[in-house]
Amino acid sequence: MSMDLRQLVRWPQRMLEHRAYNEYLWAYIFLAPFILIFGVFTIYTLVWGVVISFQDFTAFRAEHRFIGLNNYAAALRDPVTWHSLRISALYTVATVPVGILWPFFLAVIIQQLHPRLRAFYRSAFYLPGVTSGVVMTLVWVWIFYPMAGGLANGLLNLFGIKPQLWFGDAKQALPSLIFMSWLTGWGGGVVLYSAAMNNIPQSLYEAADLDCTSALGKFRHITWPLVKPTTLFLLVTTTIGSFQVFQSAYIATSGGPQLATTTFVYHIWTTAFEILHLGRGAAMSMILTIIVMAVAIIQFRYMSTDVEY
Amino acid sequence: MQLDQAKAVEEGLETGIPQSPRREWLGRRDLLMDSLVKGSLIVIVSVLALIYLLPMYWLFVTSIKFPDSLYELTPDLLPDRLSFLSWQRIFAHPLIGPWFINSMIVSVAATIGVVAVSSLAGYVFAKMEFPGKRPLFWLVLLTLMLPGQATIVPMYALMLRLGWLDTFWPLIIPSFGDAFAVFLMKQFMQTLPSSLIDAARMDGSSEWKIFWRIVLPLARPGLAVLTIFTFVGHWNSFLWPLLMLRHNDMYTLQVGLASMRSSMGNMQLLMAAAAFTAIPMILIFILFQRYFLEGLTIGALKG
Image 1: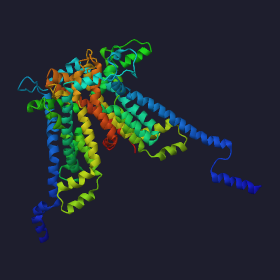
Image 2 (image 1 turned 180 degrees about the vertical axis):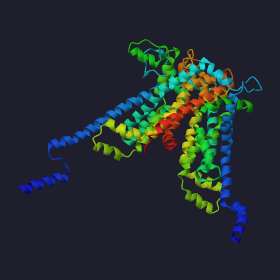
Image 3 (image 1 turned 45 degrees about the vertical axis):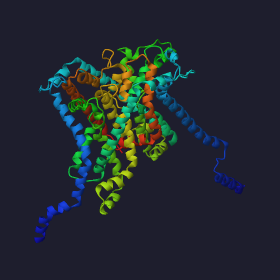
Image 4 (image 1 turned 120 degrees about the vertical axis):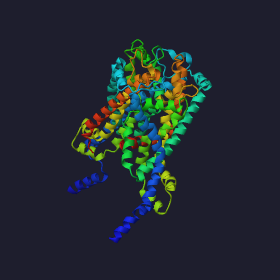
């Protein structure tokens, strides 16, 4: 009994001397810079963003009143909002499947080659992505130059088709943007799939060979299921990225012609930073966040159920 | 006779070559099919790679074409007359220099900060314990799921209030709180042997010394990946600098380049400027390919 009492009394003193206490202190010190900046610029801004979305926050007035859900209502009543949501949805639906299947296809091909060749082609496909979105968009603006000199029109000319307006035509602008996305920036997907395929044990393929499985069968039953984690990752990130596309719309067409390429984020941009109605912009950002997270969660649920290892 | 047969079989087995001509042809046929398949795959993938790289080639070739030959209807992929006029004009462009320096300042400063802050934080999450560690890490991970656009509006308001608009601060400081960088560092540092750290602790080494002299040198590959990704990411970033920077002598290279787009007149100049903007990143990629590819896989496969 007396032993217990002594230990009890000594407990605070022991805690202070405990190695762990010293470790905790240093952990907090090391973590401090990150937590400080993360706290201010991620957490605080996130919360403040929600607050702003409920205010009539413009850059012109000093005080901002709470106006409840007015911003959201105004945003949802605005036909441009729905139009831009449709544009973003169209763009996403058109780019995501390609963004997953195309890298998969490429990775499968290069997987059959010698490892050194594989590394070479991986780099070759990744290289265009290293130049910025701005550079790539400008190159495609030049490729889709509406008059003589543009590569696209030049190619059409070889087939006797007359020059098109591409980004200058309200009907062709969005398809041109989509086509541009098909030929740029899937290098990362190729690398990821290629790395995942490297990890598939050769023995599985050999077993399939013994069963005389066709090449197609091998892809369907071995390769594709075993790279499901990569597929899920690419699905979620490509969807989120495509839905938020802004750069190419801003640089290539400034959202036009006639709002043909006004994506949802572009609409947020003009609302918040050109007409400076930050409150409504924040409300739309929240709508965007909800949509994106809902889609991501759905994708996770749908695909995670049959991820096997 | 039986002995001769036996000898023949033995010889055949020893040399390993199929005996009948038909068997020989069948064996060679597999090899032939294999090489044919491999060969055609190489052709296919090379064609695809060429198509993929065509825009980049077109970018560079356009910038060095003879100006008059630029606007012909049939595409001229291999010009026979070259002119470096546009490149001369780019280097003489009054704003290209400032833009380049601005990009450098922002990218270097941000990279140093991100690497310093994230390596410390990543180490803590990987190798140290403290109350509240797990919920905190989950919170950090959770923010990775957020779309980047969720915070641009309040960030703009914040920068407005702080008076940081049209300076480089908003491009540098907030990026230190990069959740993905911390995640990357944590994943990487977790693979480092704890025994070394524990041994150093028992020897009475201070936590800072352990971090600086043991963990950091061991973490060099991971740090290299983070450095490269952060630098390239900042060099190529567009939306945030576009929003924050007002005066065109403050622009980074990407924003300045985009501002040249409106002067749609001179496409060749635009291409030369774009090529100029892209070349540093291409060089970095060629030199440090390994780190790009490794970084991608660490980030995604374990996430």
